[in-house]
Length: 233
Image (tube, rainbow, N blue to C red; front, side, top):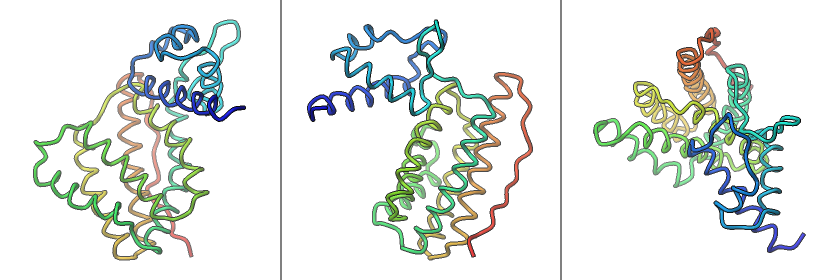
């Protein structure tokens, strides 16, 4: 495979993912390779390869005799994603506290404090997106490339879960800012056990909120969640 084709394939993957995360896809309609190629302004071959990669990453699914669709996640899927996040993000926070926060991670402190002081100046989507970037920066501060590589596909699937359906609990989004500040402080203080516990408690609250949204939209029953996470000895 030539370098040029690989770059085109990667570009098609990123643009298709952005298109899906933008909530502009009709879930009931199969994706058209031809129409996507026309929309992206590129050949069908890199788009075809990008679709295959998105199927591999569980963003899309191929249904026999029907076509390729955006994969709709169930509440059970979301719960399983969070279970993986507990393990990966708990370890990332633990290591970040051991090894010290990066300057980029520290820079979130003033941003979050301003959000607490002036909540009316920020919309929930903006607050959520900054929080998602903060979680990613925790992984970078952990200084473990394999951990970050394991997290990336989970992060994509989680983003899909939030977009489909595209709803936010405004109270929870605001509350998450103070929780992010607590996580950051524990990392800055070098308290690994507290950082691990706080980020897992934070995710447990996020999962409960996400489950309530799914329940309100699909009449599912919200499962009971455990909020404890034992630190590494």
